[in-house]
Image (tube, rainbow, N blue to C red; front, side):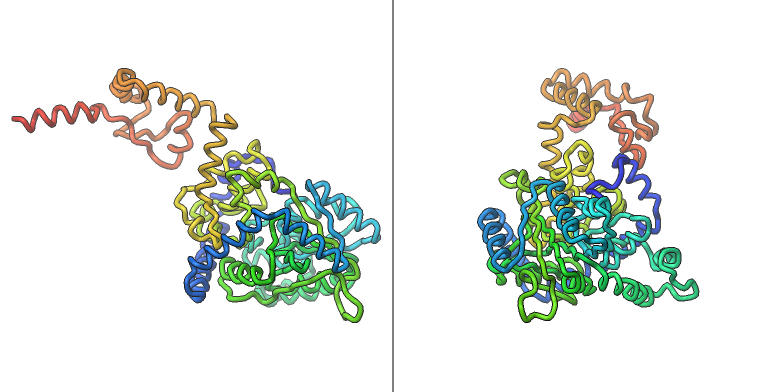
Length: 477
């Protein structure tokens, strides 16, 4: 899987998902549950706005001193006995990991949930190298065995499936007894039994990284299933892949951000597991890998530093913005055609993958600002979406031709009082063939998409100025 799911247009993806009533119902239910949990968990902390300001301060400090902290992190990982590789591109990262797998003669690799490994298409690269890759996060595992279905949510990747659908997949792919129930606990027990042998026979474990701690060279993983602990303790070789911005200076900042991550993501004070690992197993330790590799991925992130969009790198991948977005609520995660969905995806994906395929995403927003308000590290998401729109139109010149011509015509008319007055007088006659009862129901060009879902008010036959002039005459009488 790469950052892009398919070659369909944004409009085609939206149309398909708008007709998926089950998915839309599941998204509404999940959004309500996660949003309520976040609000309750945040209130328990006291002054949530002060926490947000502190979280923002930590993330901005790291980004403004990123070279220093990356150097400190790399030094401390190597002091602990690990190997560090800086990957400029996705291919650099996958080539390095393929090389490690080849040297280890690895045949089976177990993975815990990781967005950045999806971003760089790591599974495909390892399968090309002859390895079998097994996802061990329950949601990711369900998607993998269901013909590599795509994640629809940053935190809950299989959000778009219900228990019966999952059971059907298990019956088909995992020899799950069809007489058994579709109860979630029963399904999870079956997967746990199935995966145990995968853990025990894996050659390499691969994880993402919620936060790396620069002062110690440690890696922090925040999970609820315990699979990351198995991935990092049983295989002899561990590889952790992290985006270059995902670090904190010390454990003091780690504590703050883990608190905010778990509350913002799923409304928990703490998750079931917070694993902190430093390097490979040391003499006398009973578990952990014999060899540890940290792959630090740039893949376009350094191009964002120092630009108007730098604040998007503050993201801690909690998904809080997704859980309050009214657009995501209707179109679901797959419509974004990216592993990063919702408001964070609408800002980040065009920066990582370009406007050519993703110029529509910044327009997938009502600009209500709910995402910015929910963000625990105060990323001004709706303002960044506006900056994207500005860049797409003014710098990239990627506005639709019809829209560009219309805006030029409006600019010309608006700058001349005589042209404006003439245009206002004839507007109602020009659109008369399209209007009925004062409304346009089937508009051409830029109006087409609008009028497919709602009416557009037709220009009045009488201009306001004419009405006002007549009104004043009447008042004088």
